[in-house]
Length: 201
Image: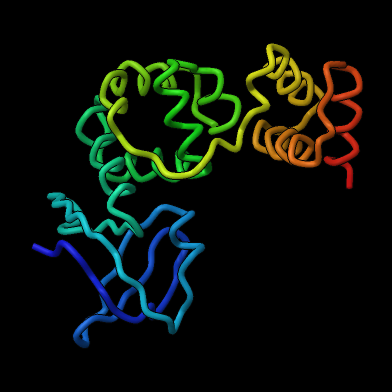
């Protein structure tokens, strides 16, 4: 069983990387945030989880840190009807801001999961129900980045931009950029206008 892999990154694909170790190229499925940190021709060290499927054989899932691997296994083992591919999809979303994801689960705040991380309302509630009480002791490094949803009108702002024809992902990016630039106010109309200026650039 492969538990750890260290070698040269031979190729980076859309959802995986090929890592050369001992003359063998291993294809490793990875979350997007981790893939973006790799460089072809450079060495990588990955924690590995193997998954055996009757259809695809053995698949490898790789993680930059032990904490990422722990969260992946928590998703896979705790959330109903979640296999390794779905668990990796959940992890990719959570890694956008792990401290904020952690906070959302602890506070059972489905709005953060839907508004920022892109989960559907049904999936967000399923994740909260499955993980409540299981992430309390999980240590998460770093500070929260997403403070915008602490305001009561944030879901309204997302809905307003969506109604104007923008996707939820586009709306979220605009709001995050607006927040990072200190452009959010308590005036909904002004926030919509400011977000639209960003979206139209």
